[in-house]
Image 1 (tube, rainbow, N blue to C red):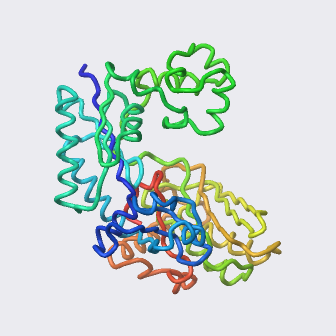
Image 2: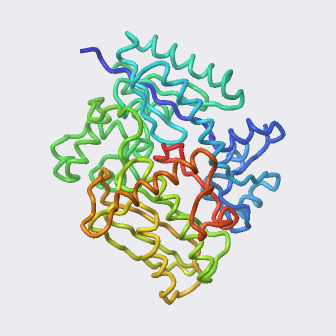
Image 3: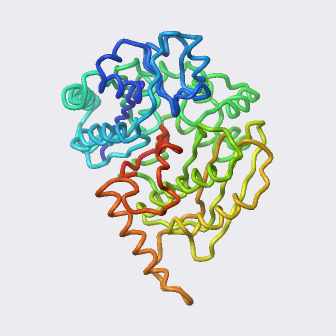
Length: 404
């Protein structure tokens, strides 16, 4: 069996770079991409020039103006980013049939069956970078990590110089592990605190730790972390997108309000986006949870269940719509989120009292029309003009469906 060689590609300052590629007048200038251009908006991506001034993801628009008055703010265009991602991933897919999109700006490529050593893998990585430059856009840059496990390939990509390439092999692994724990994929602040309480402060110390003690203190995840930094493969490349455990959508409202008509309109858009994603994956969910966050920091949640599973938008929109209508809100709402859980492959079983198969097929037919002729060509009246109320948005992590 051939040794694995895995390549990880991570686009640099992706949303901002796509905007700079599309508009040459934005190049070499501090650019911040926002979900909304309102003063209360938040930065979701920034260019290298903006990052150098402290304008980073999560910074508010007003704060960004103070950090760098010359910042150019751009409202995000998800369709544009998905289109560019498709082109980049199509290039990668030409080098191996084992491509795993990890997010809208990251992907893994297993090259073990196509190359014999790291030198050949490096040549492919450099060729991919060159093709992105020539075929997609000269202002798009990426970092590439190459290693013998999926974890180490991503680790290499994360610590590689911007627009650079880094190889981690069994021979040089030790030289790259004298780093903070949180620089590794899968170790957040809470886990790093627990590891520090065990006397482990760096990745090199984690590698040298006793796996039995790690498992005793941290459970199976402790052993998982030890395997990662020791170059023991415990994950595989999944071809295509991985089946999700949940499907959802959220909006930070441009208008902070308790006005029921506005909130119901946003809810309708949330439900339709989530429903389209659910049906695109041919899944159904048994539970739907609506989350509202107030301006004062409090929140409200409502979970509904369906014995036969939710598939059409109307099946979970109707009860949540009634909930919003009847609920006494405690204040202005700043954010709404909807999540479908307990997912399973859709069934074609006929209902005892109503023909759900006919309803499912009708929803599929509407989706096909909208996919072909544009969003909301055929839709509920509740969604009329919602593009001006709840704008489309896209996140980085796990966003691997580009047909929305």
